[in-house]
Structures are given as C-alpha cells and as structure tokens.
Length: 98
Image 1 (cartoon, rainbow, N blue to C red):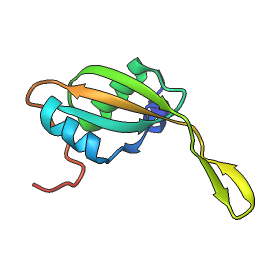
Image 2 (cartoon, rainbow, N blue to C red; image 1 turned 90 degrees about the vertical axis):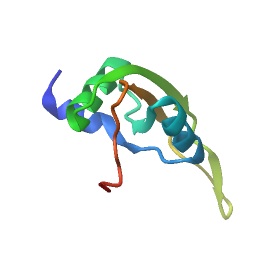
Image 3 (cartoon, one colour; image 1 turned 60 degrees about the vertical axis):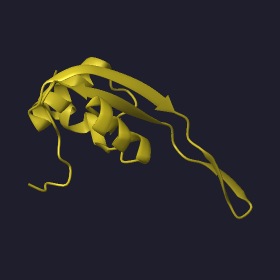
Image 4 (tube, rainbow, N blue to C red; image 1 turned 180 degrees about the vertical axis):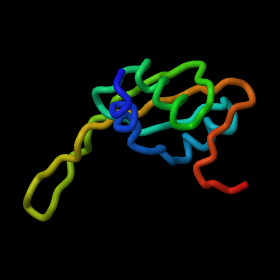
C-alpha cells in the first residue's frame, strides 16, 4: 500500500450523539472514510496516523439524502463511516486537551 493513499482514506471523525456514547461504552471511534476504502486500509491508516492498535473495523454505507433547493431537487453524496474498535487502554483525543 502506498503512503499517500493512507492519508486520503480518513476524511475526519464523525461526531454525533451515537458516536459519543459508543466511544464511552465500547471503546470505539467513528470516522468518515473514503467510499472506496476497505477495512484493512482503514485499520492501517488509523494505526499509522494516530499510533494506536486497532482490534476491529466495521463499516457502514449511508445513502445521500434528497434535498430541495427552491424548485430544484438535489441529492447529497453517498458516504461511508467506519466504527474502529481500539485495543484496551488505547484512546484517540480529537480535541487535543491534555
């Protein structure tokens, strides 16, 4: 796998009420990822960028919502999210607070 591909896989953290609850209870972190990324690529990208050990990766694809802009019908793009389970004692801090 080439190094540049690892930096394009993760689009950012997916912050929601559900992802916060999952992070507290199950030790999982939710990322918004490239739609063509597979689980092994996501695992390698998270381990390299955040220097943590990943135990499991589960993915889900979300269809883009239909939206109206006045009289024009539009559609948001499809996207993919990854539920990344970290090893016991591992943590990723997105806020940078110490």
